[in-house]
Amino acid sequence: MKNKFLLYIDILGFSDLVSSEERVRDLYEVIDSLNAHDHDVFSTIVFSDTILVYNKKPPANRETAEYIVWYATEFAEDLHFRLIGKDIYFRAYLSHGEFDHYTLKNTECFFGRALVDAYNNEKTIQSTGLFIDEKCLDLLRFFDTERFDDKRYFVYLERTFKTIEEMSFGELPLKRDIFCDGENVPFLIEATHYIREIHRLMREHSNPVVRQKYLTTWDFYQRKYKRLLDHFVANNFSHESLCPEYNWDRFNS
Image 1 (tube, one colour):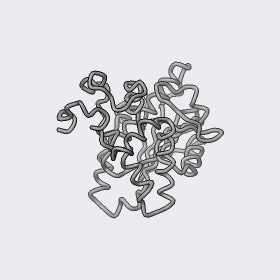
Image 2: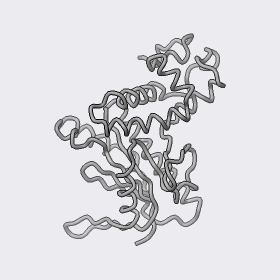
Image 3: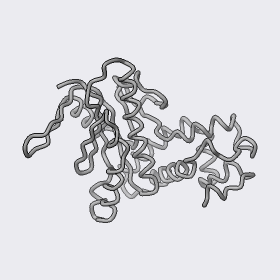
Image 4: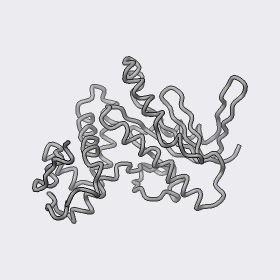
């Protein structure tokens, strides 16, 4: 076995999903369309409510390792966006270590320390979203993180909020000339929907254990983007409240 970067994704609430054949089939259509399947550097394994993505060959140098970690993170981001509006969420963990995957005549085999570590770490995190092992942290590019504990970090997959904060220069709502045509925030509607649902589920989900997962997710985003999320809460998560002077017809169509 050789060391690989392994992205372990667990679809949350799958036992409830299976009661609806239509929703399960829709979920598998989403999984089948993920960008990870089309990248020749990576292999993907899907079984039940779990998705594994790993690099086929060990990286030859640091630059390649950074590339692998970057794309693995973007695969999680891709799933994040595809699930918005479907009331389906996931928790993922990116680990590094020994991993092997091969096929016998009748059996697909995959095992290794990286898989064990990812499985054990993912199951103990009461949150949604992507978490990354400290062994991978130094290689991560383009995504912000926040420490979760002594060896795990939360990754901010929803990057739209960072763009809005940079545009606002500390002032909300935005002025019309600053917001312009919103070209820098093409996923604004989806991002607003996502964070509204996280806020709703952390308060209204019938299971208190599940509420805790959404509360943890909300706390990460609220600490990092406090001014913006306070604005959303005060304005009932209206994306139009970000710039009342703007004609929102293009976004709302």
